[in-house]
Image (cartoon, rainbow, N blue to C red; front, side, top):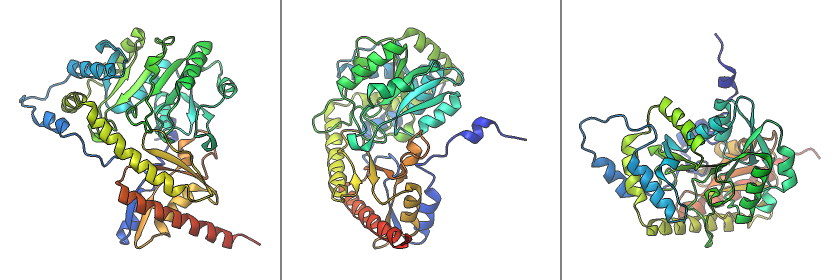
Length: 404
């Protein structure tokens, strides 16, 4: 028997693939600082957990395919705080942001059609594209300019007769870049020119720093029917295991079609939705405290790493990731493995994500790693010191081994 082409082609996670080496290091007695995955250590709001615990119905029944009405209403109230007016019919609850992206891909493109995505991008977009049998068309952004949107001529060159949408993530995973309003207006004009959908992955919308305000694709006035926003509570409320996301669009045809996908998988999880309703009722003070904590963490990691003149890094403005470009590293997969197998400082080392898996262009990102600054400040300070010591040693060893 043979497996499907889809099964053999789907990408292995570059975020999780080093787990066996990390496990082996722990067995040798090495402690590991996990900087590879966006799993926050900020506590889930107790209101979320209390709402789940308060469930008393003796039967846990199927819920509506589009999600509990009280959650969709709570999300509309939440977006109204940002002056974004939504109707509950424009919100459909999904099994995490992952299902929301998969639904969006399936509703905008047929087999073999293309979605343009600036790279580096969240690696699992590749997996969702494979499941939907659509093609990711990458356009390159660069570390030297903070991974901002490429020039219009670069975007234009990516368009083909099979292009159906463009996806942007802001605040960005994996770079931490926050797109400006001017960049969003460029995207709106681009979408109108080529009759494209705009998919916005905005799951980090609250995580913007230095006084910046996130601007949503939903705020663009002239592309209301083209915009599909992907949302999630995973990072917003530090509830990654709850698997509650949403698709948001003012396009009635899009939402009617996505509802059919939702009906095919029956319903999203009821208990976690009840928790989400309680979380969405939290005041702005909750997000202020979380933002302040992540900004401290960003500053600690950025200030430490940029002391190395061989590192290219612009200060991230949102989310809790950074892509670190390193002189002296030609294969970040090998470097990340080496950190786990050959490097430790006082029996401690770090786990990072090689950046190659966040690119669609073969060979790109080979001198970069993604770091998630999701640990408390003292741990990040230690992790940064271990990384810099490892980088210096790695460069020295490779230089010594190079032929004269």
